[in-house]
Length: 317
Image 1 (spheres, rainbow, N blue to C red):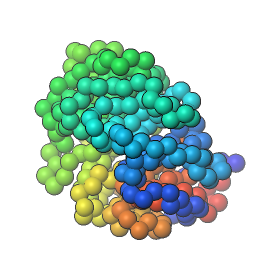
Image 2: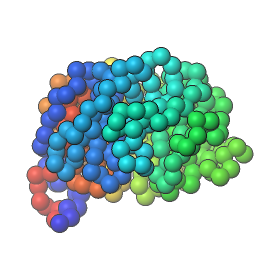
Image 3: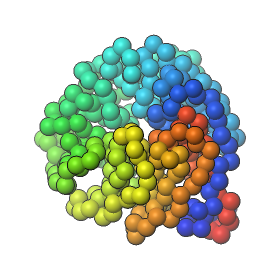
């Protein structure tokens, strides 16, 4: 039985399950591509894996030595990559079932602020405050490609995994062809530089037509992925702490979800730019992470707690 995501269904989302495993804020979450599992990492140095079908926590892995941020599932079963918050700025490839590191990816000299995995192969991109963007292959510790940029870079792959976007200095988006990235970007979109905040995340919509820019302020931008034209600006959610709040698409690219420092989840219509709903969960702190499950009708949001949301309306069936 498939439910279609329409306004009334989005408004009907309620918290179905809350997990209070973490003692500090959850800084990144990622769904497995098949939607069956969710992985999170926290400033308490814990990695927690959840079973989305059962609505349970399946296991916890500690990363006390190196800390953990920007965690992502890789394509191989039970493996993940993450950036480090202690010791150095190396990216680490982790086997989750036995908590062993499979490989280290050294090279960045300052904090890694962007990490994304190719949707189609075992390559990934990292962006750092050292103003470089690096391309890696999970099978080799050596960097496969290095781009020196003029400011802090954030990156995202398009849904086909053929091109990637780099957001530079909170003012321009550069598109690169993965087969010839060493030739430089094939197009650059110049936007008005953010005055009040920094860009902290880029995401392509699943249909590949738009790019969502999240910030550490109270503004989210949506731009056309082919022409760089600004399409929408989403505001009206508080972020008075200057934290990088995640914004995400629904799988059908129709809705935009964002966390906020008021502990709620804010939702807009991507086409009209109108606010659709504000969901009130049991979040005592700022909601930094929000993502929609790629396969199942569920939403996850996280502060120190992790919340799983399910729709209670059946109008879209």
